[in-house]
Image: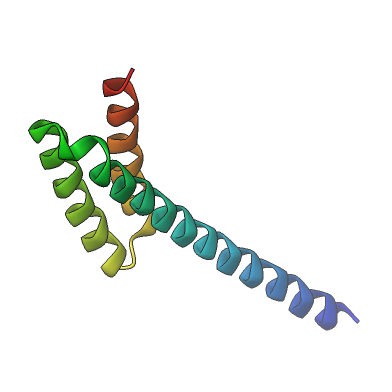
Length: 88
């Protein structure tokens, strides 16, 4: 009985890590989509914003390709915050 509980506990922990990784990947992709949207709208009229968005997308995609979703989220979140403040 105890072995079954231990195995079940390990399964729950493994599933939890998998869900967190999937959620991080989804957030990275969602932030990248938001940046693409910004690139289409605001970035077309302001060269500084266009440069920021292009550089951020390149850096975030590089982090995503390496499997570092936390870095991708960090990069995109910082850029989206700057863009929100810029658009105020």
